[in-house]
Length: 240
Image (cartoon, rainbow, N blue to C red; front, side):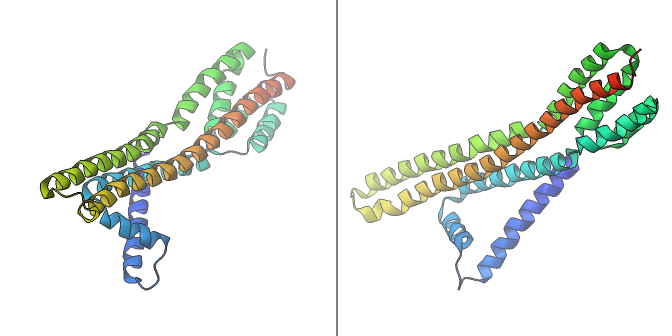
């Protein structure tokens, strides 16, 4: 998993800075990303850098989860048909081998159920429920970090805004004049940190919701396959 996160982080950084350099060379045709880049430079680099780190790390965890979940997605109908064929021949060991050789949490749960077939249907159901909880935890691994970055990014933006406003009032106090030109620049920089914090949170929230929906789909398939496995085992008289 660490390798996947590292690769995702390298990919995000390379994509961001590669696009950053490319757009810097093409100043004649400013795009939406070019405008964001210019506003980022205009903002306070201390807080902008922290917000950017939240974006990079958050996207790295999102990409790692998406890759892992896509690998974990299994054609449950095809898997159950193959297991049914083995059980119809009385080959429980062959059915276990089919489940063991298939990647994904669904296949792992079915393998645990088949492994406890000799102890009766209650033992099979108990094994499926217990190991299903373990697989559920593995699927949700890393979501807490994505949630953390979603929460921290706008907070950092708001903090930058508050500090920027304090600095703007310090300038008013030092100059002794309420002229807009004195504080306009400071207020603009302060508000930019909030804007970028919210942008990062929105981007990560979209990925987070997609990942959660993906996990829900895998869990639903896993539960359906578990119920179907007990029926298949009963149909083929695996229980004694």
